[in-house]
Length: 175
Image 1 (tube, rainbow, N blue to C red):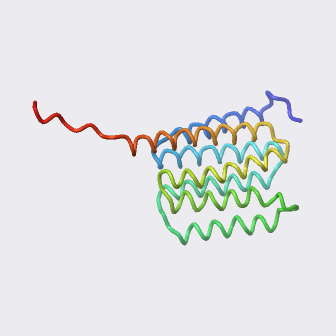
Image 2: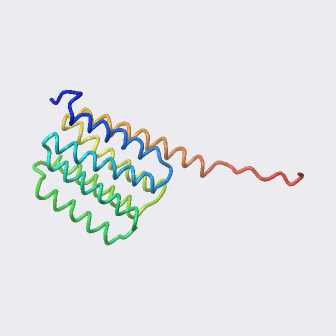
Image 3: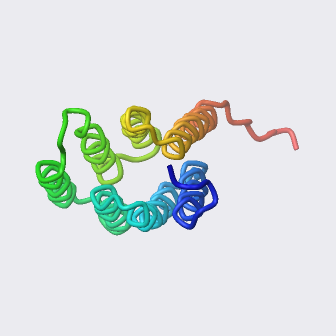
């Protein structure tokens, strides 16, 4: 196991902070921007750890999040899902290896085709798939990140739902 304060781990800690920051955002655009930033930092993290498939997946996910800032194209979402599936076919060695591929495909649908709470719900399912993958893989940092992201995303969705359903005060007409 890599020492807790090695360069690869420090890069992972930066990605952790960016990931949590992403899911604290109520703004979809800010969520996507911070998510892209997290993915690019994770691409470096996984490369430093000697895991090129995870690095490539993170790079694709970062590009996906940036593209989703500019377009909501179903065609582009399908193209990115195709890239994810092709990468899965080339790199997956066991059935559990499909968990991150499925997570990435779900997140692609979320960031291109959904908004608000529905987007965050699909991202939560993707996060849970990553969480199972990281537990099975023995990734302590990844497990911690996905756990925190799941909790923060759930909390943010509850805040959004509460804000949407809270009664709005009526202006006092007697003044």
